[in-house]
Length: 151
Image (tube, rainbow, N blue to C red; front, side, top):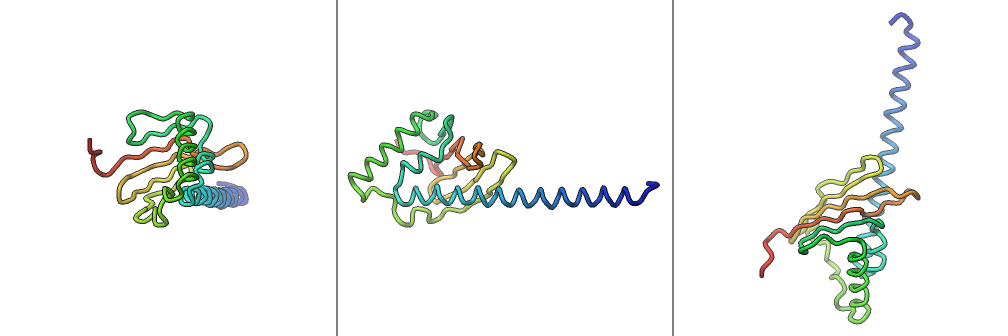
């Protein structure tokens, strides 16, 4: 290149883009991790109405149930769990409900992110979507048991 000043400017611009891009991704990862922690805290405290609020308006739940749950079924499920806990607090998840949970990966890719984890009894993945307000909500909740369901 004939003008070394231009090359230096280009290299500095690239370095700035990479540095700020990594910081933004770290910030988003921190934001997602905070949402995951809030979601898990709501589960562990039996606040299923709050758990339900972590799903997008078009969310799907694909677990070991025989069908895919749409948003209305997800809402019904968590409302029923909340009613059950209010009638009988012993149905609340045990304090060690996260025992054995191991995160395989938590990743942010723009406005989509995911977390993949295992427990002693199942494997699961949440696909999160960044909302207009910057918060993260679950668009897809997928899980499968580690062993076959007994009939």
